[in-house]
Length: 591
Ligand SMILES: Nc1ncnc2c1ncn2[C@@H]1O[C@H](COP(=O)(O)OP(=O)(O)OP(=O)(O)O)[C@@H](O)[C@H]1O
Image (tube, rainbow, N blue to C red; front, side):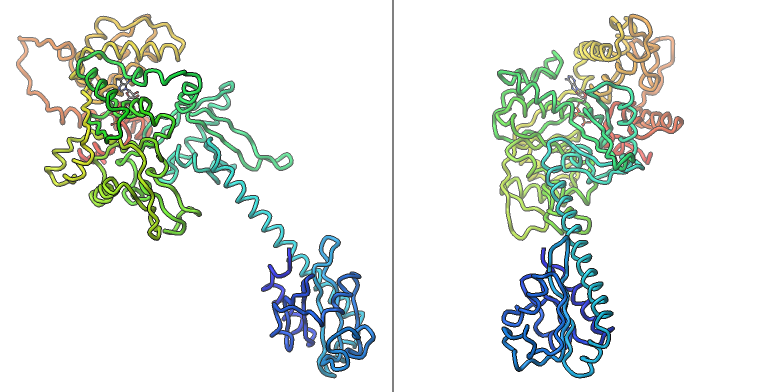
């Protein structure tokens, strides 16, 4: 470590000393490069002192000060190129020592009689002062070394953290995230929104205190519940806990990884998609057939019909299964962040941009699969950009100067919207529609395949009773008819939530109607639920589906508001995603 690295500070010290003592000051490093100089020596700064360095060399090697009262005539000056013709009238120098080693020399120089007089008026005092200045420079160098070391450690830590395939968070005493690695930002969508951080950390701390290892926690991320395996450890200095390190693994990814490692073949990737109805079996057959191809797939279906489940199964059944499956929800990411989420950005592209830039989902998906969820909600201006990227099969990070990257991922898009209708309304580009609509797969709504309702309900019940440690044998006859006749606007997600709710509440061997969530079924009278009509009653005007939906959304919001809950809970009650809930709130003026 050379004084050269703190040249500016050293020059300032030289000038300050010169101003106080009114003599000239020169400072050299251990290679006899002039680091600082005042007066006559200033023009030689950052030049070598070869040939005129032997007095400094003697001071540096012996670690002692040197006093020259007659420069150019003193015996010590003999080897100097200026011997006999020296412009100086006096010189005092002293080594700069750091950790027992000489790292440079500070010299005081006189060039006329006045300066000479000042220099030698009280040599003892001047030497004392010079030594203090040498110590000051050594301290500055030490600080710089420590700072550089710290920077290096921080950088190493950042690289190691980002290379980890676990998500890692550093948390301070006030439960704020002070550092998050790339995987954590991806799992928790931190770049889009980290307002839930305190809630997540509270959930992790709660789960930490109540479970043996391996510990699990369910966090709501972007409106979806995600299960993580986690560990939390304190970072201590002495007895004091300074921060906490939390590591997270996506439980589903761990399970998939375990399955990949243990399975001799990929198994049936579609096994998780239940249902025997002709409509669902047809969708599964198409998906299975095209899983191996490179063509773009467009999954269409209402919210909760299993579009994401299908996308995962297709990826699993494809030759790309060892590569990543990256999902992005085009409705859940704020419009101004969407473009950088898709294509990434280069270092310094905008204020707050991450050092080193950031890969977008196209890059992250690599040779895997990119799942563009809720594609119908992609803003118009990005539709054009996406189209170009899909056509040209290459893209650029934002702020990159012409460097293009290839699109290697297979694209699966999904939407709950009627894209043709969006095209007709001028809200979706026709050319993009055709680019995505290569292999369309329509996922049927649950009410269009009622024969699957009870099958799914029993599967969910078996799973939840196992988790809850209960022995519920099934559904009462009446509960079955209620489930069968319900229209399930939230589709399979709503059914799964309904069964989970009922399994939690039920105390008998069979799920009774009373244990079904009131907010779902209060909208329908018992006679309507079973599909029977009472001829003695005057026919009531039938509410439109939209009216029913609006009323359900309002009711769920109200219920959650009363118990000071969060919007996510209203979404869960309705069996829809957070993004869908917000869309519906906007649509019905309930924001
Ligand atoms: N056929 C099915 N068999 C078993 N579970 C299903 C099936 N279809 C959907 N599910 C479950 O229902 C929930 C919703 O499914 P998914 O998220 O895939 O729906 P989606 O159509 O992508 O919804 P959204 O449009 O709201 O994002 C998930 O928990 C999923 O596992």
